[in-house]
Image (cartoon, rainbow, N blue to C red; front, side):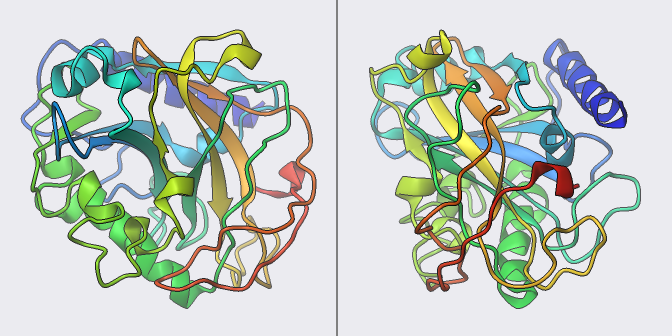
Length: 314
């Protein structure tokens, strides 16, 4: 019951924000956050065509609340089509030069006013070919890493969201929703600057946020092919989101607490051609993965294996 209450409050807050008709001066972090800690962000960015270099970044709410969703859950997280169309054009969802991904992080300290994961926990997305909450995830996890490796990656994510000039909370919304930022092309901390080829990752292995091994796995490019047929939806994009608790965590809510191994599946996200973002939680247990893309700070870490145990995580 407690988990559902936390989630309900998060969804109610987002619904209220989505209905807001006043354009704020700058995008606002949700749930009382001042640093972006624990917030789940999705970013859309174009490398060419209409809106080239721009990014639309959305703060969907507390990642831990979503992680506590019961298996089989499907929830709408708001409609953002107007912002996507105004930035990237009416056919944004057919463009192979437009991609989206999802990320969240907790930094070196855990905010006292927000329910979050252990310090330096990271969430990252994996592109998936079909949004189908009735089936097991088809993607493989990023590996967890030591505190020394995950800490700088978490800091880069939060830098983009809260403190970086031109990043999320420094950008005018250009939207009727305060939880949406439309980041200008060339901004020093915008979403695109942290993707492959971006100005901020050239010396960090050229990986998303200097930590995820490949943008081909982290982000998903759009096309004219729907990915939601299996779920009976018209989704044009889908992502599985994984949680990486630092491998040497001692926090009571971190499981397992030692060793490098695979991160755990938390939930999936889908977006349709109207810009409606949907959360789903796969209802079939995840099998033991084989080889994984590693979470690194500029190089690959060793491959690990671990069985997902939803009941053991926070």
